Amino acid sequence: MVAKDGPAEPNGDEGSGGLALAAPPEPGATAVTPAAPARATAWRVGGSWLLTRILLVLMVTGVLKIAPLDVTTDVSVIYHGWYEVLQTGTFPMDDVTWQYPPAAALVVLAPGLLPWSYLTSFFVLCGVFDTLAMGMLLRAGLRRGRSFTGAWIWVIGVPLLGPTVYCRYDILVTAVAMTGLLVLLRRPVLGGILLGFGGMMKVWPLLGLAGTPRGRRTRRSWTAAVGAVATLSFLLAAGMNGAFQFLTFQADRGIEVESLGALPLHFAKMFGWWNGSVTMNYGSVEFLGPWVQVISKVVMGATVAGFCWLLYWRLRARRWQPSTLYDAALATLLIFTVTSRVISPQYLVWLVGLAAVCLTVRGSSQRPVAVLILVATMLTTLEFPMNFGQVVNSLPWGVTVLTSRNLVLLAATIISCRRLWRSTRGPLPAVAEPALAAAEEQPAEQKYPVRPGIAYEQDLLDDIERG
Image (cartoon, rainbow, N blue to C red; front, side, top):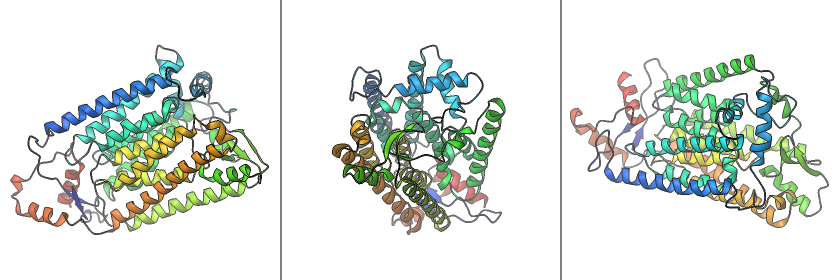
């Protein structure tokens, strides 16, 4: 696929940001049906996904143990405790570990609708949403000009997190965000609603709107997301007590021991230069004491600086390619994650999911970033649950693994932002000119037809024709 800047819309707004042309069909393919080899690849990817999920279920159920730490207690104890409170029609207002937007209550309540135990039902829901994400990636890979590389990233990346990935509700949120992103360009209203809904479960899915093409898609998707957030907020606040109480539980947080900002404290403690405490605080193990407030202000400043850069990028971006929406979402999420005071292990499934979405497009600028995310995911499991005791106590091996993971994430963030900038600022690839010339010479009735429901590139052409 190639892309070129499009003209402004009739109302004076900038256009959708790109003219995309479909490549000629491969032998055995039509406008609707991909070539047979693509379907064979889809079956191989699907089979690999099934095998890795069998392995994952064995880890989750304890048949295959990779660490002495039992990570299922978050579901069987914490989530189930919240479930008991939420059933009464109120949020856990006196529980500082509840730090989630109101729609998270729907996720916590959902296992109660299934006939099994709460723990088993939660695992089933995780499996269902994992399947949904896989199905969306396979569907995207079957389209013209797309790739199954994204599906392979999901197949490999999710089990690299070990049993943790099915013992947190983040995989459900990730599946919703992935679905929203994958439909956003063709159906901006639906995509905006899904990302808004995901944002009400865990704020980060709203970051997926950072790279929407200028013009009507941005207006429609952002409006739909705001509408979804406002509607859910009103319904949950009206129906239950304390929907936004979680906002008061953030001011006194420390620095979580797995975050990038925690590294100076780990090294200081390891060499006896720091006399603070490491304790369970607001639902996570955090550093409390000297230097913590200073580091908190530094990382919050880094977050603000990162989002200022994103705003500057969006204002200066010259062109949108088929992959730009996804690449921008991943870069934004990396900034959000790396500069956070908390980097919990389950956050990596967010990054794996968006990296997978990026790589459904062959022209994505984020391929090396996806590799770094897989490396960081593997190091995360080595850090938690396998060596979490060493991390908490700032022992050399635990600090080494954690430092490696965080530096890989930092490198991924820098590379992601740099490649996003270059992909939207530089000249068109050299292959674009011959493709454009060939398209101009070819009679209209002989052009390869692309249905809007299969590739968003045709939707961009429709915008230009209406302009």
